[in-house]
Length: 145
Image 1 (cartoon, rainbow, N blue to C red):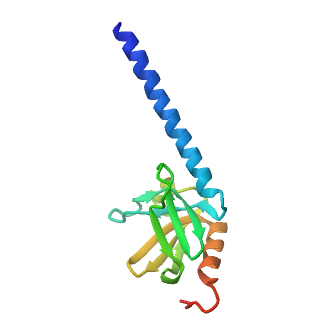
Image 2 (cartoon, rainbow, N blue to C red):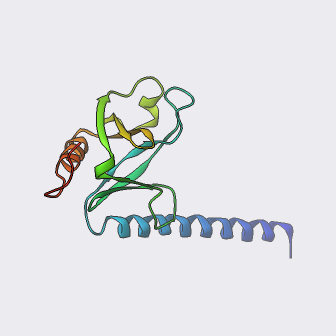
């Protein structure tokens, strides 16, 4: 077999893998959002360098929990889960500096406190309204923070 034929086969195999990965991402997103309650939610995974460390993802309300899924992952499980009882809204701010390029244009940065420390999330203004309502609307008899 000629060298150019190996190259063509490798290119076709690579293209096939890219298409399969894209298809897996689409199917996963559909499965995550089939029950509703999903929205674009960025999570600041690292805060060592100012304005950096943001990872784009999808947030989903699941009863008393907020689940966060990475956008470019094929895992069906959430990467992070926050419980309503242990999460408290601390404030919001507009993205600054390099954050404006890392986040979606209409997103605001939300600071929350949890027992394990501070958490920064970025979401749209309508999603923030829903998030605040979700935090405040615990079931009857639940502790309110």
